[in-house]
Length: 181
Image: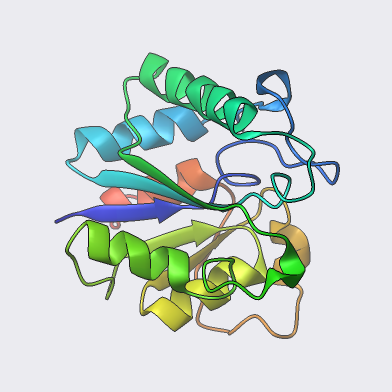
């Protein structure tokens, strides 16, 4: 199975230090819905793995999170793409759960649900915790320079071998046509 896993905030849509708390606050990063469409058309399953501690903090409820994700699905669908599944951690950072990135639980759940090994599966994120979760789950971490990406690129904890791309669209172009990029 061809699979790509994406973080949400800072990769597909613009991030906010105040959290994305409503569908109106979900604003796609230019080129991201079209990049997901390119993956879809190339036969990839696209799965989102996102920490959503705003639920535990009471900033929004499940109905609102579903509405935000409906907005994301609609934007991707309008570009001709599809997101096959969304996995999220609803817990606060201090909950010590196994699903909150940088822990690998969410990615391991994706592997189990899709009955696949994550070896070689790209996990595209903008934060060090995305890279760490990918490594812990055996996936291939990819960093984009949208969202928290510039700060993450300069973090001394970032492993030197992690590929870095300007945005999701540039990663997809290289991933689908490595000799053309």
